[in-house]
Length: 231
Image (tube, rainbow, N blue to C red; front, side):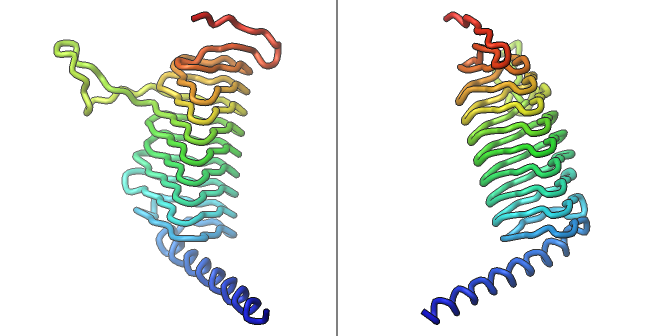
């Protein structure tokens, strides 16, 4: 019994020392780290001078912050859980008290998450002009990508190197269901709900529920009005 108690206390002491050491290493690379921020694992950093971390941020293990081609700003009270990767190609902002769960990837330029945004595990947010407003919820495995490929009008060849980008806007308190895909040029209204595994190719009005591939509005969840989507 006493051996178990000693082992638990030693383990706790080791974790405390490790976390303090992780914090020292991060602060040595990122000058702008707010008070109370804690780092519970390894953080891989490129160009820490281009990164700003607010107060009381919590970071898990194997987190990657790559700002060698842009800037990253993480707001006060944010949580970056295990295996989160943020790669900036311009500017990426994570709003106050937002949470990026395990294995979330945020990559690109002009990406802005508002306050208290919840991004569930294995989500990918990638592009050049993506805004997610306050208190929006992205379920597991959601993919938000504003890029596309051009097609050569003469040869009809799909051109890998010439991407076309159209902005995406997800309004406050919208809920994107598990596995949904949000494509470029789309605006999702306030309080809208996107069904699991839906593919959103057109704008979705506020407080509407949309499902399917391509996603179609089936109901306004405030008025109760239903829509016949047909076949």
